[in-house]
Amino acid sequence: MRLFWILLAALPLALSPLSRAADQPAFDARLSGYDYPYPVKTLALDSQDQTLEMAYMDVRPETPNGRTVLLLHGKNFSGAYWKDTIEALVADGYRVVAPDQIGFGKSSKPARHQFTFHALADNTRALLDHLEVDDVTVVGHSMGGMLATRFALMYPERSSSLVLVNPIGLEDWEAKGVPYQPVDAWYRGELKKKPEQVKQYMTASYFDGEWKSAYDPLLTIQEGWIRGPDYRRVAWNSALTYDMIFTQPVVDDFPRLDLPTLLIIGTRDRTALGKGRAPEAVRDELGLYEQLGERAAQRIPDAELVELADIGHVPQFETFDRYMEALETFLEGNGRNGSD
Image 1 (spheres, rainbow, N blue to C red):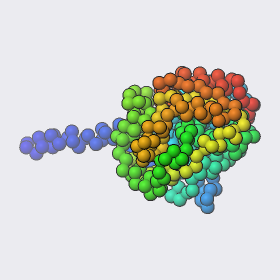
Image 2 (cartoon, rainbow, N blue to C red):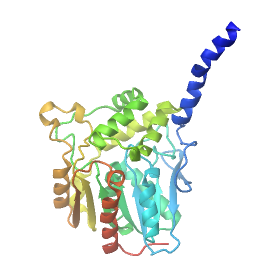
Image 3 (cartoon, rainbow, N blue to C red):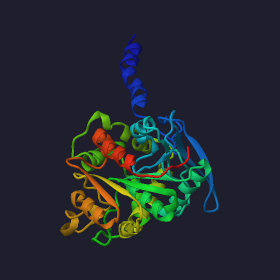
Image 4 (cartoon, rainbow, N blue to C red):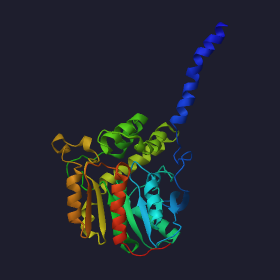
């Protein structure tokens, strides 16, 4: 009888990890246990003496308007977070292509790879070739804004217009005083991350300290990778892409953009890579998006600026209707016909 009560008392402890597992998923490097909002396909790429797979969603409307929108995700995101944007655009008649770049989302996480925005742009061009899409409106958020800029510069004949949603890279952090950090240091920092730190970072950096349940989907992948079996590989790819972002600024190339460009800027955003390493004297001068958006609009020859007051780094989650209104209005007035 005594053994029965001992076992009964231990039962909640034995079950608790199982119950937590349902709420705290763990993902492998390719997110095989994570469902995207639309069917995912892959494109094989022969890149840097290896074959890699680029995952993507290609969502087509029932009544196409003949135009295609290319959605490029940010550093801490994947194609999946474009769900509501895809739904709205498809309802408007646009075909939408939303890839996961190499090193992100459901795409390959190579053990050895030289990450450059030029290479990622070329991979994206190869995807459009595969899909037989001639030209697109390029929409990039966060890091995706840097990639969208590089894509538009490399392939102007494929880019009808450009939309930058709270892009990072509106300033050259090294030129402003942020010291360089080697890849190994980025890697060590990534390996130290705990799942709960993902929410802490996003709450402070993206949403001004106020978290809402609507933002929860932004946590799932990042937290799941940290708990998963392949996190060292994921962390290594993350370190390589941080180095790419820091060492390959695009802000000085803005004057070369020769296409209609929309900047959607949440003015409360304070994202700046390496801000914590910057000298205290310049730290408070980094990531001031209410100033950076205006400066970028002045440097881009054909730019329109829509500022979203009191909004942070992820407008498509924090104020979807205002963000979508700006995007749809711009699309209605710009862009040439593409492929269905």
